[in-house]
Length: 373
Length: 122
Image 1 (cartoon, rainbow over the protein chains, first blue to last red):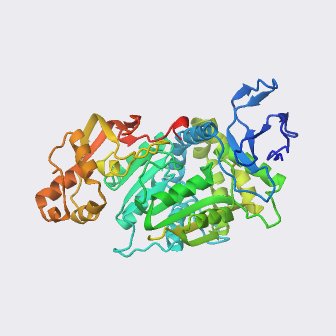
Image 2 (image 1 turned 45 degrees about the horizontal axis):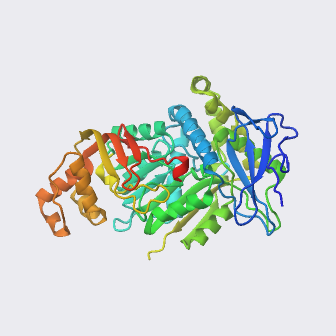
Image 3 (image 1 turned 90 degrees about the horizontal axis):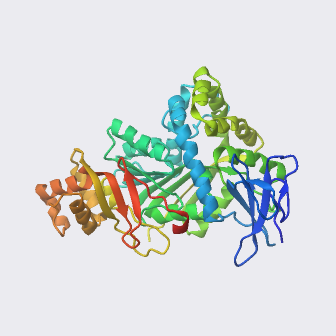
């Protein structure tokens, strides 16, 4: 059985996607034990030639995979290492280019703020909202403040410029390791730590969340704040989070998901996939999954106390605020000085608002505990 | 990169059965003074792979750590001082971490290790 392209519903041949003159998709069979169809959708600035058909195609930038065989939808999983490497290079370059301008306008937390629903906020409220997001996440996961039970070693997976690492290290008087794909971010994170007198409490590595360079069971708190959406293999991502968590440790994932599918649905509707594709392209995101998918993965690893919630209502003011900040003189000047990747990201922001409004995009928190033995 | 971090890092190249501890290639070591914290040292001691710490500190030029250690030694200020120095005051600024099985080098620049794997190592 052949899967369908996320955008043009093409079959096994290369073809130009209708309505997308610069967007071409291709389908190939990649599974080993069962037919799993890998749909490659590519959009970007690199052109190459497919020698089989002579059609010029843009180089693969990211992968969305759908199950080929019958029996209901399967969890989207990663595909080949080459595509992952391309995605990771894109992510690193995006953040190498964009981190500075973000920090300049928004500060060192690169995540959504937590707001009272339907509140109106001014720019100065956002930093405290971002801190509230961290505190609410810790509270949701019941992380203890008690000196005997609070976390001693923390890993910040997808640490950005280290905002969470430094905050958590200070809050719990703990040590934090941060990992990011972006060398620029890692350097900046370390520099900020040194400037804040936290050099001995936090350290940063350039590393891959799908292959964390740590031994098993090291961390009392495994923290992933808005990095999960970048992971091309959700299963591997969650596996690694569980692997490096210490027995009895807490895992906190705050991430962008798409809405849960109804029991009769095989996949999102075509127009929903189309919207997500535009966002994926601009923000270097692989295929999205749902909150329910994360819960299933955690359950499959026998993790305990699994909790999940939809916090979309609490983050509503965020994207309008980011857009507003981009449209100030400072914002525009910074964007023009940055680079095409940053600008493209900025141009995609209205799609995020659209996605939230349509109930397609969910701001999700999923937490759990690793069993003690 | 402090040796506290080194004590947690391992090579996860595909096929490697024991990627810990990583060997250290030194190009530049820096010593940074850090406030002494006895509670922290006592908490960390049981979690530290001692041999790896000793070996790493020697590679970095510090030879004062005893070959073996047990928790009773934590009552000695002298021992605590050495433990503290090796664990958090020695920094590898430039060099590499080396996979003990494959010899693959993970570069360390400006104190930050790059542990990303290549396509064929995953």
